[in-house]
Length: 495
Image (cartoon, rainbow, N blue to C red; front, side):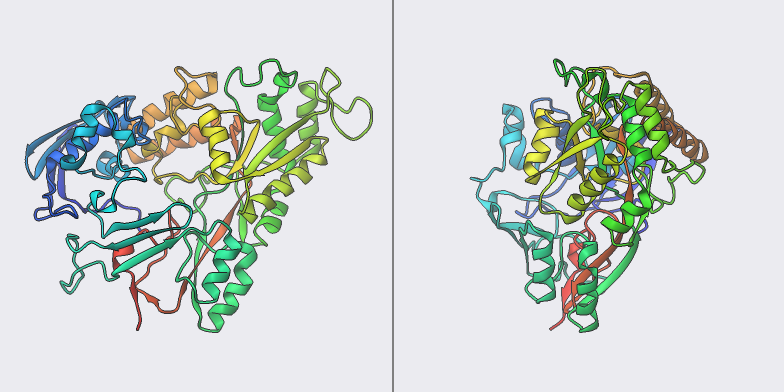
């Protein structure tokens, strides 16, 4: 709730004078769900797994500092040292990105180079062990995940009693948000995975008035939906639109053309706020209050487009390029997410007013991710992509040009543009300085460059409403990550 770092599996830690070397004391008496003791060797093993190129771990980039791995060593079973390759202001906060894996179960696979295929659909659930409050009981692909209480979980309640309180947690896979809310308000499920969609707020509020659910207003979201183009060099080779599809002027014109207040009122039914950056006002520490918003300026947008040769040459209301071809592109977004579909529709309508034709293709979420993350074959995307932390230093995979979550052009061997190089340099300085005010100033400069080039365009962030069944107690919904399941071990049921 505070977004501060707290002891968990690590009971305490201390830093050397230069802030680069930490000594970490692990909590004693902790075991994995199979009874095997948790020790410093498991932490060292997990870092090895994250850094192993054969594993191709999604954790890899987020565990690097200045592009280099951390040095991790076990001093004794309950003490380890963590040495950063260079100054890293957030310190042990980086560990929040890292789940700990059991060395005694997975080391043979890491040594064989097959860790990426470990724990697949054919693995018996009992073989999958962890340190959390629940263990896997059953996984039915596309249907449900069943988790049973971990009787060896280390954490205790305030009165000394065992946690978690629940004996079983069943996560149903419900692809359509409206169907999910209908099941909640009819008493078939106890809470939803994400927030209440704006179009369902009125019906959920009625259910709250009837005592069926409890409704929480958590304020503005930290994670607005994202609109971006494929900026990978060569992505449109042979396509005559290559001359303009990746231009800064096109993205800036789109940002200026969309009326963000209309967007917010239409997409979120008034329960949202216009935003202009990847950081929203909900992230109070890092939101730059002194950056000017992007004005709604259709005339200015048309002038920007004309500067790159996109004008209405035949008077039909649609812009054409230098080859006489209409200015048209395809946006992909996720099917079954009404707010994404509404958002895409509003953008399409707003762009039509300045002469840009945008086609919208709604795809299964896996197909959207496959298009931009795996195959990198797409023109534009409108998607919900959330940060893993509020501190920008711990999300280098988004900010640095070499990052695997640098969506518009991922994992660049060197910066493809001067402005990305500038962001790389600013972020490197921001990460290294221990002075919080200087870190804030540098990050504001990062956002200033980001805003000028608009690699990802943001229009509005919704207010976050969360509903849980009235029988559910001991929940503290949070605006960050999964609103209810971020703290599952204390959730309880009234009888």
